[in-house]
Image (cartoon, rainbow, N blue to C red; front, top):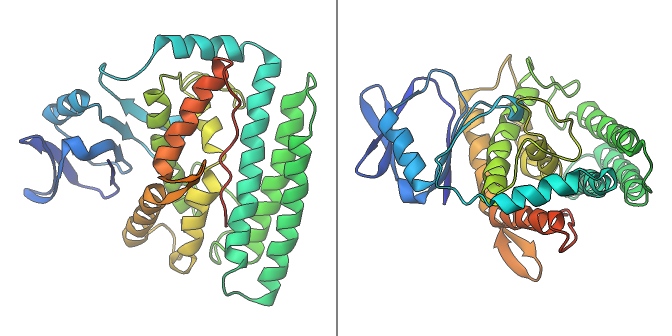
Length: 327
């Protein structure tokens, strides 16, 4: 199954004989059978969609995402989905208990910090200056200590503030090193979300938008409510569970891909050519088999299985362990 990402202005999307047709002007540039598509993500303004295509996507169970930030995504999906009401009931009951919310939030934060460490060590083994190698080793040690602090943190009434404080210290150290040693290009001075002016942050935001669509798709396939999470605040229009689950994948799936393109992160904005390469690298990462419970399974399929494991946790049938990548 493919994730189709549209990232260029002026494209027109339609359907012909059960195939998605992508046009530039009046000329078709690509056709993809609908049965091979999992999600359709539109990351750019000025893209037109036909009503026939939306009806076909609903019929084939293809989710259509419009937008490039999880908090601002528009998700269109048909009613013939695999959502199971009982899974949502278990989710709501589980997350009513503050101590249970702490359990899953701690797992998400632990996974995020460990995978930030893995990403740094992945580049540590590449050819780079001695100074960068030393800095990477020092950061890996800091992140290792912080992840252990999260793992060993007992439940208290103010657990959210404690966990977010540890996560904040890890993130500050992580982004500070990437900035100081130009791992994200010369213009990256720190992490910026909405309204980013430099190409590195634009690339990160763009990549997180693709990741958000993939996670959203996996969660709804598992029958879970994307707006009810454990870690992020519950607010109207904020897919809290999508943001929760994304945490353990951000650094390995997106940050790593952006770092690989650091030599192209120049100028005032992210160039279309760089955007295209970033999209391809993220989708390649999602399609690459990784070790999982003694087997080699595509990362995207592993993400789906992890969402099913969340269902098991909510039903109090099994534990949830974050996916820890190997470098």
